[in-house]
Length: 203
Image 1 (tube, rainbow, N blue to C red):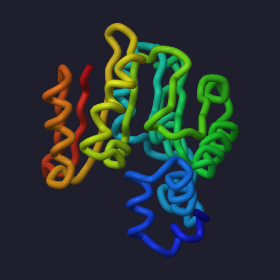
Image 2 (cartoon, rainbow, N blue to C red):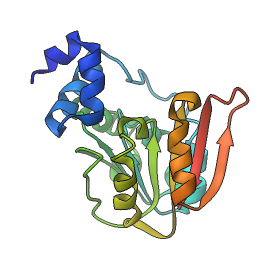
Image 3 (tube, rainbow, N blue to C red):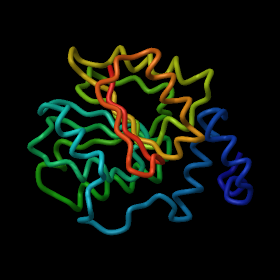
């Protein structure tokens, strides 16, 4: 199915992101990024609110960012706080934007930050990680598929490593928090004052 189909039909795009094969997911997300959605224009910018948490738990180690988009989290991390950052996104357009941003930033990030165009539902990391981050990306799994995805990546956590999940719209996605609390040890459960945005740290 071509990218243009997903440009025209938002309901088709939304469905493809959640339950479509990898080729559909890639086309849907490429259509989003081609229209300029989700791109963080200009750098330097304000680091994502999750960056400080990732830095604390990374312990100078390795970070895997699943659903990295244009790589803004990797650009927001202080280089001295991690050894290696790998961003994964199904959209080749987003990954190319991330690579370009890292090249433009120069310095040690260009050596430590790498990006892979792949489906985060099936990606296999090349090594264990200290932090596995899902920033606004767990929404795109269903109640049936999410447990398997989390168990898959659990095998790639180092001893003492953690998952960090950030998401909004708790009324709609509260089931994700419940699933995590049932199956994992939750270390931090942070909500903003309006209770519409949360971050979970767990293993």
